Image (cartoon, rainbow, N blue to C red; front, side):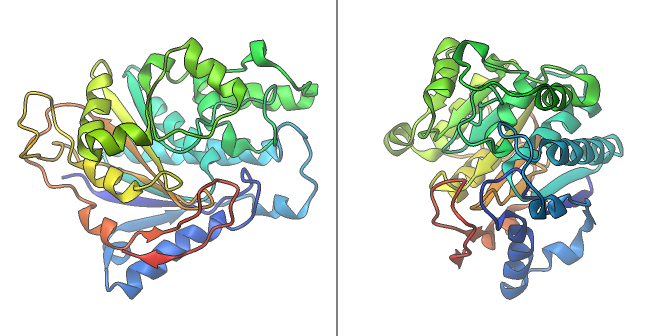
Length: 328
């Protein structure tokens, strides 16, 4: 089994409200309170953040603090790529969801010839661009960044040239754009989208398993179907945001999802350890980057114990302040 490496990204400059960066330490404190030695057992590295920008003007109205977000995405990209290239398994504990673009970029940099699929478990599609955003917050643009999506057909804003220059750089981090395509994306739990995002979801026929689907068919069945939908991909990145409920069940189900030919009444876990990113995106979210698809047999998940102490927040939206509610 590969050595795990925990990468902490205490950044919240892509969010609209404060508190996301506190989630990393909240998780670690919860682990201590629960008696877990998880964070003592594994190597940890903290990526420097740009949160000092919170004390300054937001700058670009349609892409707030975009220069800082670019810096953070580049840093995460480099560290994730280096970790994978060193044959270690990255676990990224992060703040707001904008840095997920860096995780995806890092995976593609390490595996430039591999087809990457994305399972995005979130109440939001995060498909806005500076041309369409109603808030200017970059945490709502992370998927658009990696899809190289401007959505000019739904344009409502007129970003200035400086914003567009930074936006171009963001989309081209690691010199790969796009990093994924729409057919490589599965959404789970998306329920809160603006008309500009809905336009893209319908145009590209992106699969979205709704909460109604989950309640009808079970978390486990949806997790298996999501992976099977992406069976054309070599790797899968799974992003969790806990404004989708029940997010812990998703984490366990995807960790234990298996190939379609296996009996679903007797699940096993993938044959590769799953690195993942705990991204407290106000509230707290989780991402699981880099899941090789086959075969799904006979390996114990390396992070199973971690799910015992993940803080759960009952907030419903990314713009709700981060609140630690209870510990599982």
